[in-house]
Image (cartoon, rainbow, N blue to C red; front, side):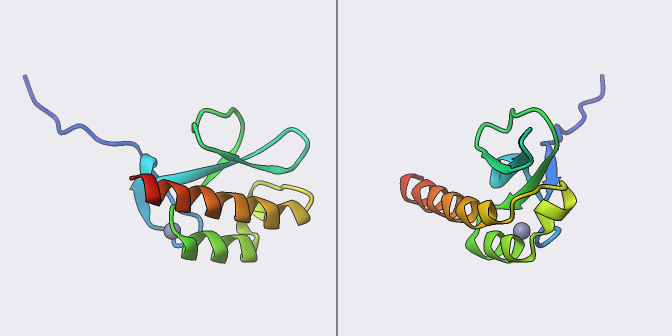
Length: 97
Ligand SMILES: [Zn+2]
C-alpha cells in the first residue's frame, strides 16, 4: 500500500494570485440577483472567487473590482458594503483566534 500525502484543498486568491489552503481564504459568491455575497461556509452554490484573509488583498481586490468582473456581478455599490463586511469579519476572526 502506498501512503500518499493528503493534499489539502487549495484555492488561488484573485488578488495576489497565491495559492493557499481553502480555510485561509474567503469565498465570495455571485448571488442570483447579480450581487456579490460573502460566503463564510464555503458551501454556497454557484460561482465563487477566493481572497486571502488579509486587508491588503481584500481592499486591493475590491478596488480593482476583479471579482465582480470575473463573476460578472452587477451593482458596484454593493462592493463597498461587501468589502466593509468582509474586513470586519476578518478582524473579528483575528481577535477570536
Ligand atoms: Zn491574496
